[in-house]
Amino acid sequence: MHRGSSKGRRERSRPPETLPLSASQTLTVHLELARAGRSETFTLQVARGTLLRQALRSVGQAAEGAAVLQNGRPVPLDLPLERAGRFTVIPTFSGG
Image (cartoon, rainbow, N blue to C red; front, top):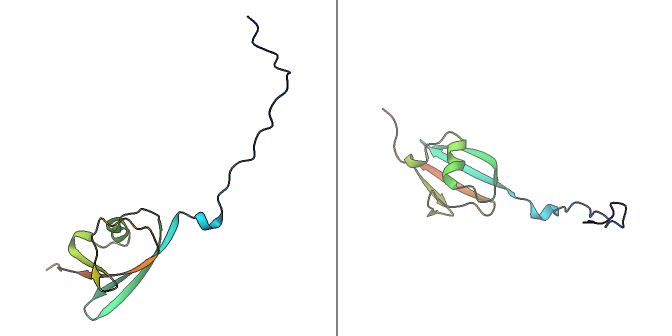
């Protein structure tokens, strides 16, 4: 059975699809670690949807030993980060 000529008319290939810069999938997140009357701020680039817990671990903070606030309100550690923001991290226990 004949399947057709390989020299027949071909469709032109389409150019690769590109996303505009506004569709970027990374976010800038600021984590302010408040400890003993002083603070240290970490600035991270994370993928959209990264859990807050993962962002804390990436800066060496034990997520389970901290309270996290955004605009003075507590937020859950399993919060998926969907937009840039600033979080205050308060350690809730210390070693000893």
